[in-house]
Image 1: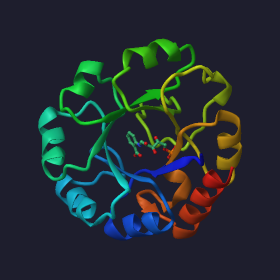
Image 2: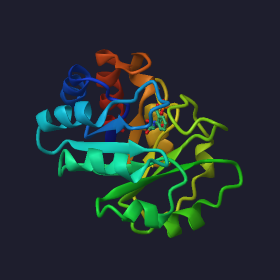
Image 3: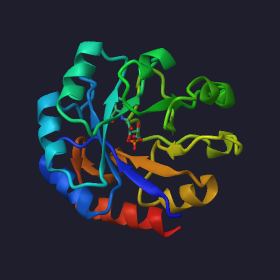
Image 4: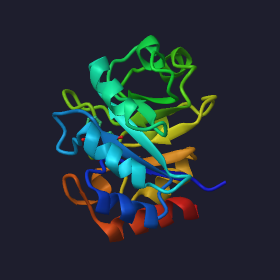
Length: 205
Ligand SMILES: O=C(O)c1ccccc1NCC(=O)[C@H](O)[C@H](O)COP(=O)(O)O
Protein backbone atom coordinates (compact mmCIF):
# COMPACT_ATOMS: atom_id res chain seq x y z
CA UNK A 1 0.00 0.00 0.00
CA UNK A 2 1.46 3.34 -0.93
CA UNK A 3 1.94 6.07 1.63
CA UNK A 4 -0.81 8.69 1.92
CA UNK A 5 0.00 12.40 1.85
CA UNK A 6 -1.50 15.27 3.80
CA UNK A 7 -0.61 18.80 2.71
CA UNK A 8 -1.08 21.12 5.63
CA UNK A 9 -1.49 24.89 5.87
CA UNK A 10 -3.80 25.48 2.91
CA UNK A 11 -4.85 29.13 2.94
CA UNK A 12 -6.58 29.65 -0.41
CA UNK A 13 -8.71 27.86 -3.00
CA UNK A 14 -6.03 27.82 -5.70
CA UNK A 15 -3.53 26.01 -3.48
CA UNK A 16 -6.27 23.54 -2.52
CA UNK A 17 -7.03 22.88 -6.20
CA UNK A 18 -3.34 22.37 -7.02
CA UNK A 19 -2.83 20.08 -4.01
CA UNK A 20 -5.73 17.91 -5.19
CA UNK A 21 -4.25 17.84 -8.71
CA UNK A 22 -0.94 16.77 -7.16
CA UNK A 23 -2.84 13.77 -5.70
CA UNK A 24 -2.82 14.75 -2.04
CA UNK A 25 -5.13 12.57 0.07
CA UNK A 26 -5.81 15.13 2.78
CA UNK A 27 -5.59 18.91 3.10
CA UNK A 28 -4.93 20.63 6.44
CA UNK A 29 -6.38 23.99 7.49
CA UNK A 30 -4.80 25.77 10.45
CA UNK A 31 -7.18 27.41 12.93
CA UNK A 32 -4.45 28.72 15.20
CA UNK A 33 -4.43 32.47 14.96
CA UNK A 34 -0.70 32.89 15.67
CA UNK A 35 0.19 30.85 12.60
CA UNK A 36 1.13 32.55 9.31
CA UNK A 37 -1.08 29.82 7.78
CA UNK A 38 -4.19 30.76 9.76
CA UNK A 39 -7.45 30.66 7.83
CA UNK A 40 -10.87 31.74 9.07
CA UNK A 41 -13.58 29.09 9.55
CA UNK A 42 -15.74 30.69 6.84
CA UNK A 43 -12.94 30.81 4.26
CA UNK A 44 -11.93 27.21 4.99
CA UNK A 45 -15.49 25.93 4.77
CA UNK A 46 -15.90 27.62 1.38
CA UNK A 47 -12.86 25.71 0.13
CA UNK A 48 -14.03 22.43 1.68
CA UNK A 49 -17.35 22.73 -0.16
CA UNK A 50 -15.40 22.63 -3.44
CA UNK A 51 -13.21 19.61 -2.65
CA UNK A 52 -13.88 16.44 -4.62
CA UNK A 53 -14.91 13.20 -2.87
CA UNK A 54 -12.13 11.08 -1.34
CA UNK A 55 -10.05 14.10 -0.33
CA UNK A 56 -10.15 14.56 3.45
CA UNK A 57 -10.25 18.07 4.92
CA UNK A 58 -8.43 18.23 8.25
CA UNK A 59 -9.11 21.06 10.73
CA UNK A 60 -6.11 21.76 12.91
CA UNK A 61 -6.50 23.25 16.39
CA UNK A 62 -4.05 24.19 19.12
CA UNK A 63 -5.80 24.25 22.52
CA UNK A 64 -8.69 26.01 20.81
CA UNK A 65 -11.73 27.54 22.40
CA UNK A 66 -14.64 25.07 21.88
CA UNK A 67 -16.65 27.88 20.29
CA UNK A 68 -14.04 28.22 17.54
CA UNK A 69 -14.08 24.46 17.00
CA UNK A 70 -17.89 24.46 16.74
CA UNK A 71 -17.78 27.35 14.24
CA UNK A 72 -15.56 25.23 11.96
CA UNK A 73 -17.54 22.05 12.58
CA UNK A 74 -20.90 23.59 11.69
CA UNK A 75 -19.69 24.47 8.17
CA UNK A 76 -19.20 20.92 6.88
CA UNK A 77 -19.79 17.29 7.83
CA UNK A 78 -16.58 16.26 6.09
CA UNK A 79 -14.07 17.46 8.67
CA UNK A 80 -11.58 15.32 10.51
CA UNK A 81 -9.98 17.16 13.42
CA UNK A 82 -6.29 17.35 14.28
CA UNK A 83 -5.43 18.42 17.81
CA UNK A 84 -1.94 19.87 17.90
CA UNK A 85 -1.75 21.24 21.45
CA UNK A 86 -2.09 19.84 24.96
CA UNK A 87 -5.66 18.60 24.52
CA UNK A 88 -6.63 15.60 26.68
CA UNK A 89 -8.35 12.61 25.16
CA UNK A 90 -11.61 13.94 26.58
CA UNK A 91 -11.04 17.30 24.81
CA UNK A 92 -10.43 15.46 21.54
CA UNK A 93 -13.48 13.20 21.84
CA UNK A 94 -16.06 15.77 22.92
CA UNK A 95 -17.13 16.82 19.38
CA UNK A 96 -17.87 13.30 18.13
CA UNK A 97 -15.69 13.95 15.08
CA UNK A 98 -12.90 11.52 14.06
CA UNK A 99 -9.56 12.97 15.10
CA UNK A 100 -5.78 12.73 14.81
CA UNK A 101 -3.67 13.64 17.85
CA UNK A 102 -0.32 15.29 17.24
CA UNK A 103 2.58 14.41 19.53
CA UNK A 104 5.64 16.61 19.49
CA UNK A 105 8.70 14.41 19.84
CA UNK A 106 10.32 16.05 22.86
CA UNK A 107 13.36 14.01 23.95
CA UNK A 108 12.28 11.59 26.68
CA UNK A 109 8.62 11.50 25.62
CA UNK A 110 7.13 8.07 26.27
CA UNK A 111 5.54 7.59 22.86
CA UNK A 112 3.93 4.22 23.71
CA UNK A 113 2.19 5.65 26.79
CA UNK A 114 1.01 8.73 24.87
CA UNK A 115 -0.35 6.63 22.04
CA UNK A 116 -2.16 4.36 24.50
CA UNK A 117 -3.81 7.35 26.14
CA UNK A 118 -5.25 8.55 22.80
CA UNK A 119 -6.57 5.12 21.77
CA UNK A 120 -9.75 6.68 20.30
CA UNK A 121 -7.72 8.63 17.71
CA UNK A 122 -7.90 7.53 14.07
CA UNK A 123 -4.17 8.22 13.76
CA UNK A 124 -1.26 9.75 15.66
CA UNK A 125 0.78 12.48 13.98
CA UNK A 126 4.41 12.65 15.08
CA UNK A 127 5.97 16.10 14.69
CA UNK A 128 9.21 17.81 15.67
CA UNK A 129 9.48 19.43 19.09
CA UNK A 130 10.61 23.04 19.24
CA UNK A 131 10.03 24.98 22.47
CA UNK A 132 7.38 27.66 22.06
CA UNK A 133 6.40 26.61 18.52
CA UNK A 134 3.43 24.23 18.38
CA UNK A 135 3.93 23.13 14.76
CA UNK A 136 4.97 24.01 11.25
CA UNK A 137 8.58 24.25 12.49
CA UNK A 138 10.23 23.02 9.29
CA UNK A 139 12.46 20.85 11.47
CA UNK A 140 12.93 17.09 11.44
CA UNK A 141 13.35 14.88 14.50
CA UNK A 142 15.17 11.61 15.11
CA UNK A 143 13.04 9.03 13.30
CA UNK A 144 14.86 6.28 15.19
CA UNK A 145 13.02 7.45 18.31
CA UNK A 146 9.72 6.15 16.89
CA UNK A 147 8.91 2.76 18.44
CA UNK A 148 8.24 0.17 15.75
CA UNK A 149 5.38 -1.56 17.59
CA UNK A 150 2.79 1.25 17.61
CA UNK A 151 -0.63 -0.24 17.00
CA UNK A 152 -2.20 2.81 15.33
CA UNK A 153 -1.72 4.53 11.95
CA UNK A 154 1.22 6.94 12.12
CA UNK A 155 1.38 10.22 10.21
CA UNK A 156 5.00 11.39 10.00
CA UNK A 157 5.53 15.17 10.02
CA UNK A 158 8.27 17.69 10.69
CA UNK A 159 10.67 19.16 8.19
CA UNK A 160 9.74 16.84 5.32
CA UNK A 161 10.75 18.01 1.85
CA UNK A 162 11.19 16.74 -1.68
CA UNK A 163 14.78 16.00 -0.62
CA UNK A 164 14.06 13.72 2.34
CA UNK A 165 10.53 12.30 2.00
CA UNK A 166 11.53 9.11 0.17
CA UNK A 167 14.14 8.36 2.84
CA UNK A 168 11.56 9.12 5.57
CA UNK A 169 8.98 6.74 4.09
CA UNK A 170 11.61 4.04 3.58
CA UNK A 171 12.89 4.19 7.13
CA UNK A 172 9.67 4.85 9.13
CA UNK A 173 7.04 3.17 6.91
CA UNK A 174 4.30 5.53 8.15
CA UNK A 175 0.66 5.31 7.13
CA UNK A 176 0.95 8.87 5.82
CA UNK A 177 3.30 11.82 5.65
CA UNK A 178 2.39 15.42 6.40
CA UNK A 179 4.09 18.47 4.97
CA UNK A 180 3.68 22.19 5.22
CA UNK A 181 6.79 24.37 4.87
CA UNK A 182 8.56 21.88 2.59
CA UNK A 183 6.11 22.52 -0.27
CA UNK A 184 5.92 26.32 0.09
CA UNK A 185 7.64 29.18 -1.73
CA UNK A 186 6.67 31.50 1.12
CA UNK A 187 4.80 30.90 4.37
CA UNK A 188 1.18 30.01 3.60
CA UNK A 189 1.73 29.81 -0.19
CA UNK A 190 2.24 26.42 -1.78
CA UNK A 191 4.58 25.75 -4.72
CA UNK A 192 2.85 23.49 -7.30
CA UNK A 193 6.04 21.80 -8.50
CA UNK A 194 7.09 21.00 -4.95
CA UNK A 195 3.65 19.55 -4.16
CA UNK A 196 3.74 17.38 -7.30
CA UNK A 197 7.25 16.12 -6.62
CA UNK A 198 6.60 15.55 -2.91
CA UNK A 199 3.46 13.46 -3.47
CA UNK A 200 5.04 11.46 -6.29
CA UNK A 201 8.14 10.67 -4.21
CA UNK A 202 6.16 9.77 -1.07
CA UNK A 203 3.91 7.39 -2.99
CA UNK A 204 6.62 5.81 -5.09
CA UNK A 205 8.46 4.11 -2.21
O1 LIG B 1 1.65 25.00 10.11
C1 LIG B 1 1.54 25.74 11.08
O2 LIG B 1 1.73 26.98 10.99
C2 LIG B 1 1.15 25.20 12.42
C3 LIG B 1 1.04 26.06 13.50
C4 LIG B 1 0.69 25.57 14.73
C5 LIG B 1 0.45 24.23 14.92
C6 LIG B 1 0.57 23.36 13.85
C7 LIG B 1 0.93 23.83 12.60
N1 LIG B 1 1.10 22.96 11.55
C8 LIG B 1 0.84 21.57 11.74
C9 LIG B 1 1.15 20.60 10.73
O3 LIG B 1 0.46 19.56 10.61
C10 LIG B 1 2.41 20.74 9.93
O4 LIG B 1 2.22 20.19 8.68
C11 LIG B 1 3.51 19.99 10.65
O5 LIG B 1 3.73 20.67 11.85
C12 LIG B 1 4.79 19.95 9.82
O6 LIG B 1 5.17 21.24 9.42
P1 LIG B 1 6.50 21.42 8.54
O7 LIG B 1 7.66 21.05 9.40
O8 LIG B 1 6.50 22.86 8.13
O9 LIG B 1 6.34 20.52 7.35
